[in-house]
Image 1 (cartoon, rainbow, N blue to C red):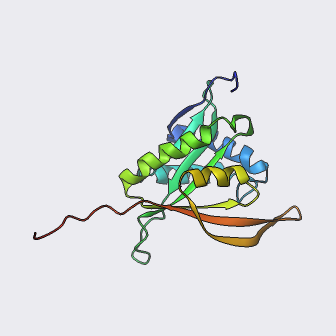
Image 2: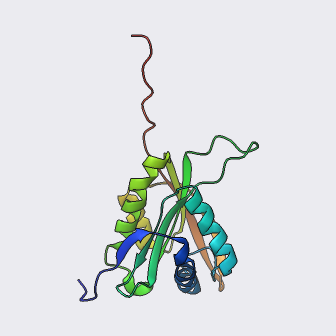
Length: 182
């Protein structure tokens, strides 16, 4: 274990927008783990964050002892519209962690924290996509009960290198319906 002081997990706030964006940008710049190679502009990040908070969706950050955001984990649910119904129980995991904070169990703690909230907000199916080259993340997701539902072969070509995308999901049992007329 490291002598580094532990990071703290807490719910994200609107005041974290710049720190979250900066962390997102650092992870994206590695060009290995995320679907984009740089973070969206700050106004876009603020809009997304505000929408997540208004809807009460699971979203936490890991902060170092100085208060800098060093990681995040969230479960996004697409908003229901009159033209898109039937998916309010499905969420998608998004997460990332600064390189210096990996390998210390923080990813596991972040996932556990958002999953503890997911059931309370009605999320029954959690999906994600992960690059096949990210073996440590695939292993972590399997420990949380995610199963592979499919593979998109050579789905990404970045810097001349192909990577498969593994589509994974974790289901929680539906809530029992009350029995009528016994």
